[in-house]
Amino acid sequence: MSADLLLAFFLTSAALAAMPGPDILYVFARGLAQGRLAGLVAALGLVTGLIAHTTVTALGVGVLIAGFPSLLLAVKVLGGLYLIYLGVKVLRADPDSGSAGAAPRKALAAIYRQTIVMNLLNPKVTLFFLAYLPQFVRPQGPPPAAQLAILGGVFMAAAFLVMGGTGVAAGFIRRLLPAGPRAARRGQVLSGLFFVVLGLYLIGEGWLA
Image (tube, rainbow, N blue to C red; front, side):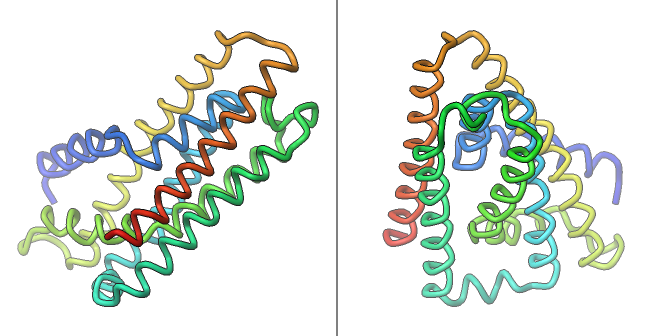
């Protein structure tokens, strides 16, 4: 695979990752609610989840998902319900426990795990990979599965730069907001409601698709 091809793919992937969507909005909300390190960890969780989507695409399982609308709907609904669950957890958390402030190490591990699960429960990523990655596969290159794996890795790098930058930027914006218990509680409520609304949106999108 030529360097020019990979560079073009990287730049295109970075542009696509920067487009407004559930993933980048989720990372922004994490950074705004819990600081730039939390946003960075959320971005890392999303990229980790992409490993599974890349593997599924390389194996061709995405065709199976696309061929069974009921299976696709079920996974979408599960993903939406999981986001709603996370939103309710944020809303019910004690503001003094650190969930609304700078995230401690234990909270960062939880964010990482939660973000991986959220990404895995989004079948649209697999379908997107199935449509996008093969456009850059070349017959004269390595085996198609190997090329797809390489492209998936390049996409992960581009996505992490964009998502991580978004999470860090949200953390800096958070530092400019008013401090104090009342402000922390407002930020916690806004973050929790955001996750709930995002979950409802994904469920509605699944039913209307």
